[in-house]
Image (cartoon, rainbow, N blue to C red; front, side):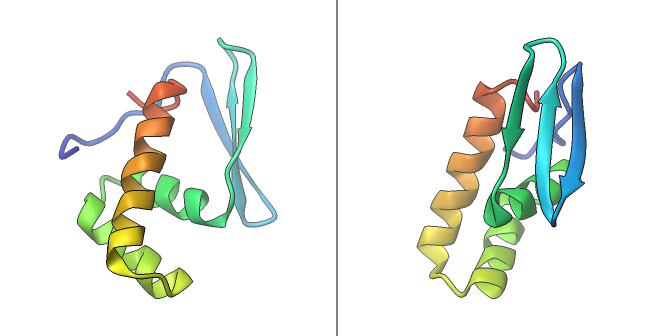
Length: 86
């Protein structure tokens, strides 16, 4: 996961109440991200490493490092499966 991610074609992002909403215009889908997924999205889209994203999750949500890493990896994988990032 070291490559800089690229937003998939047809994906529009809007922040609503501090959380990210992704509108996939091609798939005709809307995905609302919770607070932790929104943070992961913002950092990942900037090209932040999984390690740094995990550190941010630990600081922001006071969770342990292994849980933060698992959350970051699973969220990034889900973003890929939903074709939000490529």
